[in-house]
Length: 237
Image 1: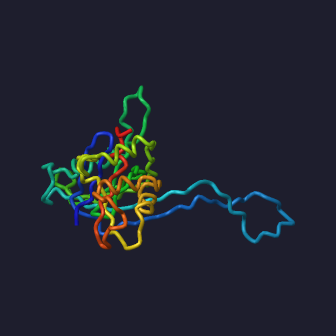
Image 2: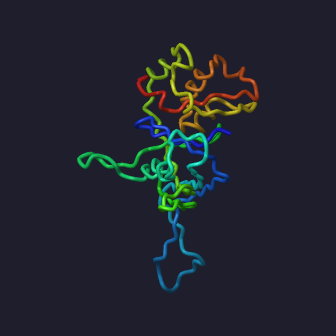
Image 3: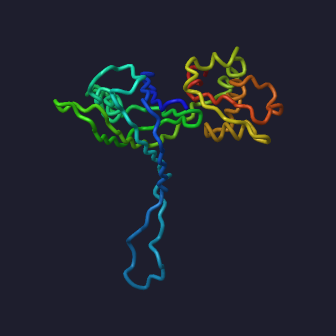
């Protein structure tokens, strides 16, 4: 399986992990809470009322192993912190003091299934195997990721027209590593897939163009469709 990769969208910097995690934990917090205020007496409710507080959030937790003796790293060092430092940087505000401060938006890729924008909300690291001078050579790093809702770029008729006139799918996006995939099931409609992956059914043409589909009714079950990221729409309008 392909290794976990973090792609910093603003700089297009890739951070590849040395080994894939053995497990990935997903936790969904629903946007409701209990109300603890009310009458002390003459209240027939068995439980406190449930109040809507928002849409909730989805959090991912993964544990990654880094070791200076593992092959495949582009950084040659005896200090494992040189390997994990880029992940720590994702949790730091490092903008100019006169600019608006914000954490970097990162895309999380793992194999053909996981592709989503996230923000790092927590980092923890446990060091193992030290040299005589106290330099750590192995560590387990635990990342907490919050999923970010991907905004749909403004769509107008000119954008959709430009999509239908694209000469080839490769012209949509030069970095194919940021594309997702979907195994087509008989009976699915491209509008449904666009709504699932983009939150807007009108973007079905984007999937059609990326896969050279002239007639959606002719798609064969089991075919692996390419799902372009929304970033390909930049500059089309």
